[in-house]
Image (cartoon, rainbow, N blue to C red; front, side, top):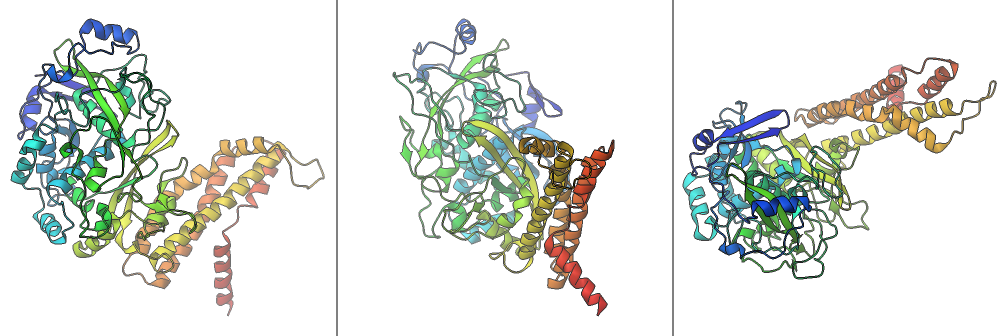
Length: 611
């Protein structure tokens, strides 16, 4: 038993004591923390001094070591925002941050708003684990009647959840420290030497990763609680990057690492009023949303915890959605020890390449797809640095069709549910990372509204057509703004001689650097985002006809022009010190301009007014 676990979570200091854990976890037993792969204290200190160069021969097999469980079914390890009441009845009820076990998370999913961690990639990895359990235990088949019955019930049945986890095959498979079948791990390491725990967390400096939101170093590894270790392991199977592997325990080198399934694509997670609703909305009774060709297609392999433990990783195709959601992309073995208070902590991890999906899944049900032209294959939509998600809204509002760009497969059912539930919009969380080969450049979590009225199979008519045009207008106005700022830079860096009026020709690199430093485009896009969501709401209004939508579109065109001018004036407001600066700003102002379609519209309106 431990007395306290404390951690810094963003702006929160979070302390859980033994009494509160017991009170807050009525379904599971009190916490028990015990060693898994033990290193003697002296050896551990020496291994830190040697940067994890520990002995490669274990004193005795892992299965023979004395241990106690850390079972994720009952132990509090999953961070959630808990309302403590049915969120269908009181959607805006205040919430508190707690850690729960898997069983409590499902039994009380209708009272939990969401999974909540500091790291977006970790959050969506935990959602996918819960989704796999729900599909396996409650919705194994594409059965609309069963889905609707569960939705109307409004919660997961406590008895069904308990029986699922009490199954003899599953009960021990969620034990993080099991001597023969540790959760999402292998009892026998393949790597010769362990790696620091930071290798499991993209937000921390480790190897090629820059420091994003943590300050841990490989040379000064920080041990983790078993709850943190569990979350890191689950995240590693979803988001590990490709790269060189180290030495093998058997001699030679291990196979190089390949990308885990979610690298390269943005994952769209539909939010409900509660975790219960979110899990169902992301597991609709639709074959496309289950990696199935049709309703009669085989559901594939069971989740990883119900599959036989392979001696070595393999290269094989994904067999079904449950197999994919629990894909073991890394071969991991935790190293633990007891701290001075007798609490078991994770100190390092052996890691090697796990199963390689070959061929990769063509269409993740939670990802949108992009196809640049009909001659090329579609690929998952992903985040891009310096580009906000909303700028590509026309891609994921268009319902997906094979060999075309389009939304996640779950959005088709979302449109049907919106009609049945009389809901005009849902919120969607989008998770992903941007990487340069084996280096993480950024990870991101964005939240955006999805209006059911805008979901359409075609973007050539209806409200979605106006969305596409609005985004094109915004991009055209951005080009006008960029040209105006570049004009300012040119006149500042290479002003014409007195009495001359030729176009300046400065060094191109210097001019681009000055344009970037002024930052007009970043201000422009940031100011437009809230206005775009207002436009979406207006276009999605069921009372609006074609003429009404056109009115909203031209109001948007006016808005983007005014926003561009404001951004230009803001970044050039300090350029008023001499005649050279004043002329540069004046020349740039002349070149902002409205988008062509809006100019033509204003001309048409003026002509009609004169008639």
